[in-house]
Image 1 (cartoon, rainbow, N blue to C red):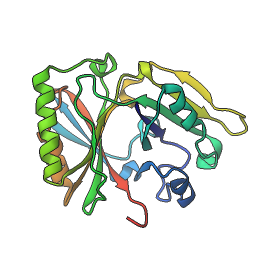
Image 2 (image 1 turned 90 degrees about the horizontal axis):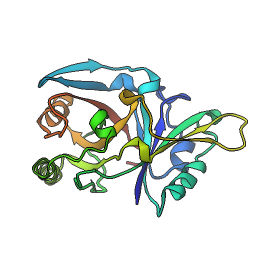
Image 3 (image 1 turned 180 degrees about the vertical axis):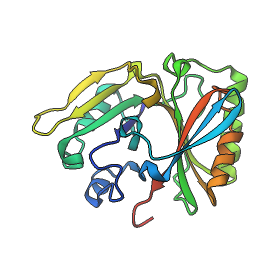
Length: 236
């Protein structure tokens, strides 16, 4: 089973020094995002696109994530419990989500290191995603074909869907607490939730926008996508 462990924003994650070398080294599977001031959101309403520039409120943001393969949900929670306590000086919130598209759109990870500007594309959730709505097979086929073509072109490096938060949990670490608190889903703050992600690389910001606007999302004509620059490790 694959899980995404999402490190929510806070604890200095919106500063230029995040993540610290110690945190990055302690979570080798982690992918970290630059502050949202360097990102933006694309909103599609009725088929018309608009751009909203960052920064955004911390309580709506993802600071980083890790994709892990575990035999069970409890094993994934145990992995999250071992999160470095030095992160955020002990005050950190993680979200543990079961990965996978309800309609069986194939996840992928090429393992390639970006050589152009890397963008993490976060598809914001909606009521259909929180109901684990499965798109029609024809839509899934278009998504798989688009992903495969983007991989072949060297644009898409990774991508994965997420199941509804009813199958997930949040883990809250608090300074001085012996163990983190675990809160089972579902969660109601839909605008804060993520339904899936892609990692793409482009030479320009406009190319990233063009890629998103050309994608055959199942939730069109109304959706929100957040684009955040990936913070690469010093050796990449």
